[in-house]
Image (tube, rainbow, N blue to C red):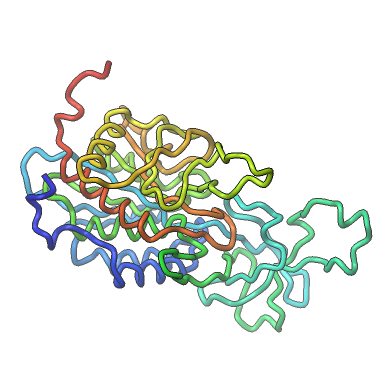
Length: 362
C-alpha cells in the first residue's frame, strides 16, 4: 500500500520538476530527430536505472528492477517527439520549401516563428500578405506548398534540406497554468522520469521513452515487442475541448476539461483500454481522493495503440494530462492536473499485483 512507502520514495512536482519540463519543452525534437530530448532523458535517468539501452529506432529503454518478489513487469511509455516540419529545398534568398511532420492544421502555421536544426536557427513561416491577395486568393484555403520557411538572412548556419524545424515557443508558467510548444508529450516524459526515480518497489519498471509517436506510434511498436511486459500505461497529453460554445448552449463535446484531473481513456481510435486497469486506477483515485476524469471516447491515439497489439496482447491503458490547443504553437495545461496525474499513476502502481490478471475476464 502507498502508505507503507517512505516519503522520500513518493514523487512530487516542485520547482525542480517544472524546470525540467521547461528544458524538455524548449528542446527541439520533431519526429525522427529526437536526439536533443534523448540526451536530457539519459542525463536524468542514469543514476537510477539498472539497465539502459537505446534501440535501433532511437527509443530509450530503461529498466528499474523490483525490490519485492514476483513483480509485475510494467511498461510505462512517453514519447519524446513533437510535431514540426522538414525542410525540403531552398528556393533562393534563404527561403525553404517544407513539409509538415505530424498532425498540424496548415491554417495554424502562417506567420509563425520556428527554430531550425540543432542550433535552433530562427526562421518564420511566410506567406503572401493580405494586401497583395486578390479577392479569390483570400477565399482559398492555406496550402503548405505556397508557404516557405524564411531565414531572413544569408544562410551562414548550414541549414539544409532534411533539417527539422519546430514552433519557436518558449515555455513559461502563469500561476497554475503551464504553456509550451511541446508539452505533448514532454509532460509525459517528465512524469516518467519522476516515476523512474521513485519506482514502486513491487514492480519491475520498464520505462520506454519513445520516438516517432506523432507519425504513427512507430517507436512504441518496437519498444513493446522488446520489453514484452505484463501490462502497459501510456503517459501522454490529451486534447481538451472545454472552450465555450459560441451559440451559448452547453458544451457537451468537451472531451476533457482542464482542472478536472488526469484523464483515463476508455477508448480512442486505436485502443479499447483494459477494463481491469481502468477499474484499478479508478479505485485508486477514489481511495486516495485524487480527482480524475474519463476522456470521452473518440478519435486520436497514444502509444497504447501500438503496445497493446504486440506478441500475445498486452493489457494497456492511457492516462493523460489534459491540454488546450494541441498541435498548435502553444499547449496550455494546469499544474494541478500534472501533479494529480503523477500521484495517480504512482499510487496505482504501488497497489498493483499479478493477481489483477489471474482471473478470467467475464
